[in-house]
Length: 211
Image 1 (tube, one colour):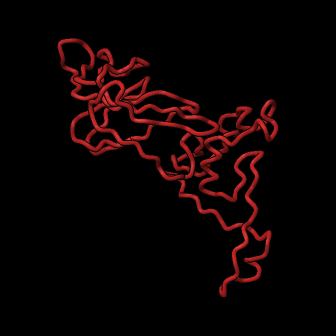
Image 2 (cartoon, helix red, strand yellow):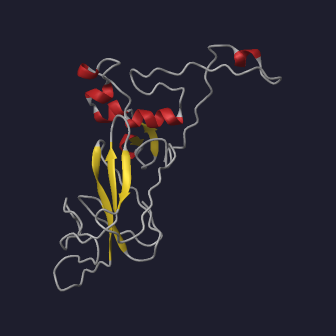
C-alpha cells in the first residue's frame, strides 16, 4: 500500500487503522482466507468538537481503530476476497461514493523476498535465514495433506505453495505436487548432448534474496 498524494490520509483495514505519511508505503498482512474492504479517510483531526478522531470522509464514528465499523460514505472502496485455494479477487468500488483516486496492482511473484512474513525464520539478529513450509508454519491438515486432506483429490496447492511454484516451477512445493517433467530443448550448435538428454536435471531456481 503506497501513498501518492500529499494530503494526510488514513488507509484503513476493517479492524484497525494507521497513519500513512505522504510518499510512504506500508505492508499489511492478512490471514488467508480473508475478505473485506479497505478505504482511506481524509481531513482527519484529533482536535475537534467531539472526542476521538474526526475525519471529513470515511469517518469511523470518531474512532482511530474502526474495529469492524464501516467508514461513513462517500468513500472509495477496495474490496478483496483472498482464498487459500483457487483464485483471489479484488475490485475498486464506487458503490459507496468517491473520495479519492485509488489504484490496485499485483506485485510480481517473490516481490519483497522469497517468503511471506509468517513463513520466515529469523536469526538472533533479526535477519531472515530461511522459509518454513505452510505445513510447518501453521500445522493445519489442509496444508499438511493429512487426515481428510490426505489424498491427491482433497489436498490442493495453497497460496503459499503456488507462490513458490511461480518462483521455482521445477520444485515440488507440497505433498501431492507433481513436478513438471524436464523439457527437451531443440538442438543448437552450442547445445551439449548431456543438456538435451531426456531426464536431465531441471535448471536451477534462483529465488529473490531473503530479507
